[in-house]
Amino acid sequence: MNRWQFEEPVTILVGMGFPRKIESVMEAYVLLQEWPAASRNSAHSVALNACKAGIAGEIDPETVRATLVTFARRNDILLPDMVSPASAMDNALQGGEGGRSV
Image (cartoon, rainbow, N blue to C red; front, side, top):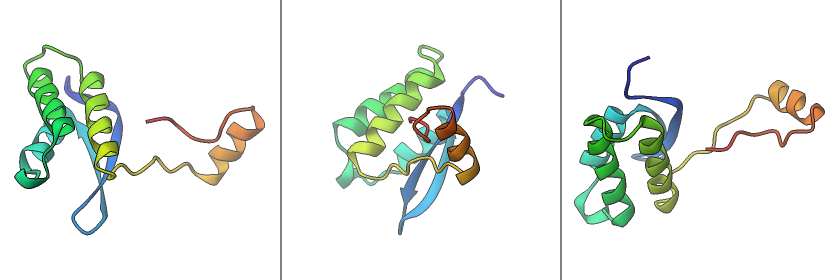
């Protein structure tokens, strides 16, 4: 695992609704750099600045990931993690909720 890798990828919808897994600070940075200028907002700015700080080693990858998740939620492009039926059943039997938080 490289120093910029996320512990868990963030899956977002791009283009015509195709899922794309973002697994590192660099992948998040590229995505945000390519984001259409007309669609940029304050969440985009915060996430992009976090990526730059993450690349510079000023903040950890999980902080960058959190800002990417916020950006994706605000733009309604976050795809929730899918849980397999078997793991959901195991989690339910153990008293869990059956899903992971992002």
